Image (tube, rainbow, N blue to C red; front, side, top):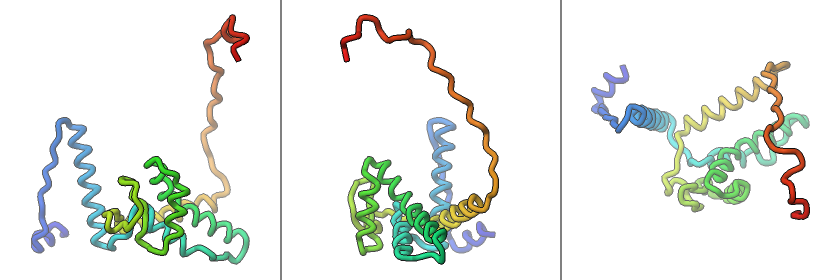
Length: 183
């Protein structure tokens, strides 16, 4: 039905994906699929500033919010910190201190102000072209909250017992002979 509607609206395109190997073609096809899905999500619900900045802005809205009891207040603090994690990780992956980046963005009054990890510049994320589909950010947040809720209400969990690591083999006891006075 969507395909027929697109044909009627004149919004049909054929995208040819090629590559030197089957693996390369598959990788490129996956990237095209991701881009198409992101574009559809952006058309459905719009876009927000990317690079984790939208989540940091949400974190700011929770500042000063107190729970009914200490447990709720602790939960709010956990959510605030978790909302900053994507931005911090992006900065760390770019070789920059994530806490410093998060602090600068938290201090800014401009909701579009962020850190462009590719150029290591601060500024308007819309002007940098760093955006995320709002639907993707929203559903990621909803899914994370759902999983966290399941873990909190779980009374017991089963996990595989880690196997003990054996001692490292090889070397002679006592180190290398004749090297006593070196340290």
